[in-house]
Image 1: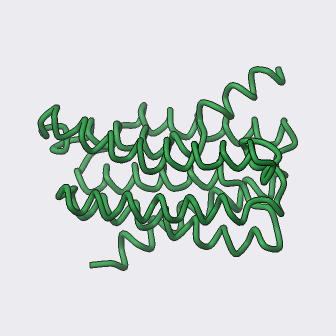
Image 2 (image 1 turned 90 degrees about the horizontal axis):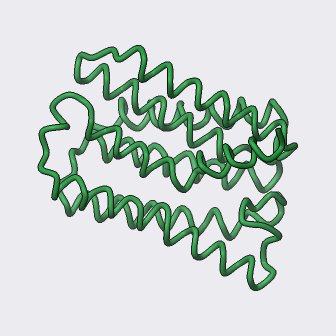
Image 3 (image 1 turned 30 degrees about the horizontal axis):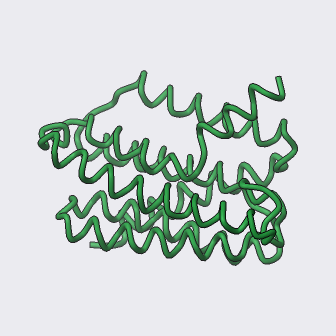
Length: 201
């Protein structure tokens, strides 16, 4: 069971969820009408900036002994990785705007970036789940996009909630986080995405 939850935690990693979310975005309503070339270009931007680059940077930190593991399990070691992720999200947002990505979707990325920024300050005193926070962002974004498109894909949304529950359970089972850290992480992600979407014109 431990191996299973480690696999789940690795596959549903915060650095992969923005990429997965972008793929899902292009399957939704009118957004599915974009050309394949444009979809691949945007997905490439997201994968590079929010996945590959920060992942490589954290790997270098581990190699040089700055962090103990790739999940950055030790709270006191999370400061630099959070700064790296913030910079990465900033790069992603700039590149997405230049690529004329729909503004409503850019606002969702701004919400995720805000969640990371708040989590950075929380981490100075208390450990919050970045895994759960990422799923809070993606589920809030999915619901917002569906409402915007006038859709209600019950099966797809149920699948997302199921995966979020599985991911959160894996973090608690592996003793990477407490239940409170997971719940507050999810709530933070969902709240910031909703705030940026509805408060930013």
